[in-house]
Structure formats: C-alpha cells, structure tokens
Amino acid sequence: MNHNGRITIPSELIGSIPRPDYLLSAVRDHDCGRMTNQRFHDYENRSVQITISELEATGSQVITDGEQTKSSFIIYAIQQLINEYYTFSSGCFSLTFADGRQHILPRLVKSPFRHATYAHTYLDNAKRFTHLPIKQAVISPSALSMVYPTATIKNYSHEQFLTDLINETEKEIRLCLEKGAHCVQIDFVEANFALKLDPTGHLLRDFVQLNNCVLERFAFEEQHRLGVHLCSGGDQECHHSFDAHYLQVLPKIFDLHVCNFYLQLASEPDREQVLQCVQKYMQPWHRIFIGVIDPVDPKIETPEEVCERILEATKYIPIEQLGTTDDCGFAPFDDDRLITREAAFEKIRARLEGTKMAEERLMKKKSKSI
Ligand SMILES: [Zn+2]
Image (cartoon, rainbow, N blue to C red; front, top):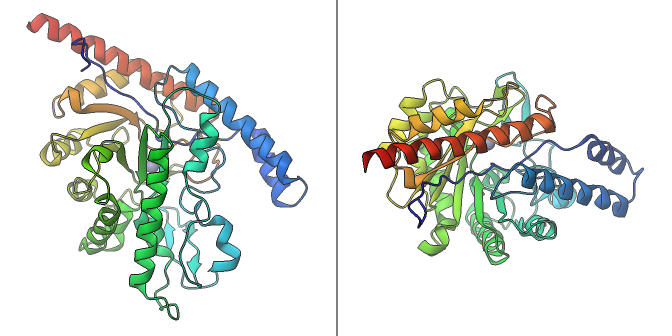
C-alpha cells in the first residue's frame, strides 16, 4: 500500500529474456572466430538496448537487462577462468534433468577461487539505456560451492575455498548495491535439487548456512534490497527437481537473511498448499513475490487468470507484503526456443495487467468495507 492509501502490488521479472536471432548467430560466429570482439560487443549492446526498451514498453517499473550477455547464469563469474583454473574432465558436479540431460559444472583444480566477472558490470552497462530501477541477479554462493572437487586441492583446503567464495560473493553483492541496483536477487535454483540429492535435508541446510555467511554481513537496511529466487529450474519443459517436495524446502528458505522472496507458484499443482506454507513461515519484514506466470508453458496467461492467482494469494499473504513475478526467467539455461521473445513480453504484459486488475479489485473491496 502506498502513502495515498492506494493498494500497490510491486511486480518484477526474474531476469532472462530469450536472445534475438541476430545475437544467437553472432555468438556462434564469435565462438568460432569469425567475428571480432568489438563487433560482437556491438551486437550484445544492441540486444541489451532493445530488450530494455521492450521491457519499458510493457509498463514494467523495475527491469533487468534480460541477461542478454550472461553466458550462463550459474558460471558467468568464472567463465573467463575456465581454461586456466578448471577442468570438465572428471569428478564434476552435475545438475540432472528429468529427461536425463545434465548440466555439468566445471571443477576447480587450481587455487585461489576468485571471480573474473562481477555482476555489477551488467548493471553498469544496462544503466546506459534506462532510467528505470534495475534488478541485478547473482548466482548463490551455494551453487558455486559445487565447483570444489571432492579431492582436496594441494595447499588449498575446503575451508580456505569457502572463505574466498564468501568474500567474493559479498564483494559482488556490495558492488551491485553501490552501483545502484534496485535489488540484488540471489538465484538459489539448486535449493530443491539439494533436497532431491540428499533427502535428509543436510545438504540444503548447509547451503542455507553458506548463503547466510554472506548475507549476514549486510545490515538489515541493506537486506531490504536483497532477495532470493527459488524455483525448480524450468528448462525445456523439464524440471531438474520438480519431484523434490517444495513444501520441505520452503521453511528453510525463510531462514535466509533477505527481505524479498521470488517464489515459483503458477506452475505448482497445489498452490493453496504452498501458500499455506508461506503463510506459516514468512516474517513481517518479508515481501513475497509470487509467480503468477509459467514461463515454460507456451500458452499466454490472461490478465484475469493472473488476477485470480493474486486474489487467491491474498488469503494467505498480507497485501502490503505481496508482489508478483514470473515462476522463473524466460531463458534460464539455453535459448530453448519454446518461448519466443514475443511470447515472453506478452506474458510480462499479462502479469502487469493482471496485477493492476487485482489492485483495483482489492481497492474496491477496501472502499466497500470502510
Ligand atoms: Zn528460476
């Protein structure tokens, strides 16, 4: 609710928008040496600029750069170090999907762990093209912790690795805040997966603890600009951890020292059950951005459907603590082409229109009850 007594429900996308064809072919040409770095960056910048202007045209009040230039939302920070510090040869951690495909993480073979790219560089670039507030996503330290091999690296203990990882993530988040990010969203997509891998919940608990080692270094006021995104990793209509029980993961997520939660909900088979769980564990200083759009379903939601989902959620979440989002990014892993750019923007428009519709209905209900 804003200071005029109007009901306002903030609405944000998660991050990624499918890249346009000209950028995808530029990536291929650049990868095989047929395009210079300068020319490639020109294509990237053009894509960021156009994506931002299309997001502005949807009426979004908070935007991202569409993650047009992130090579991977998991390993962007270390991508440039892969040849020198990492191997894919053996002992690597992999995220396995329902259809058996695997996303393999590189394995660190040389100390120290460090970032080559900090996420504020994306933010700096995006700021050149918009005056709207920009949300910046970073990968969780728990996801990157899986690059450390089971065997110890000589003269580099696991403890030293974790210290470096925590310091690097803190630095990355701080830089984003200092550079004016509206919010820094930590992508904690491996939370569900952790429970699948270790049903006792120990791995998930360790992940939450590791992430909190970073988050507790931020003051409470700063934590109001921090958020966490939780989903089952939507990708090509498969989910790598859809079978893990969301209801077991959620209570642990609310232990994280952030104030904003971006939660998958639209594609959940039993939304009321998830909402009951959120109601039970959320705190008065939390804002819950519920997923009202399913980014892997090619069908475009209607504003009415979105509105109904929001009204359903208000039975469990106080309106002043509610926000709306999409269940996940529109192209989190690859440009899978199931959802076109046009469809992604249409879905975003449906979310915004549906959110506005819900605000109006709730205002009417409020004025009737006065
Ligand atoms: Zn996601």
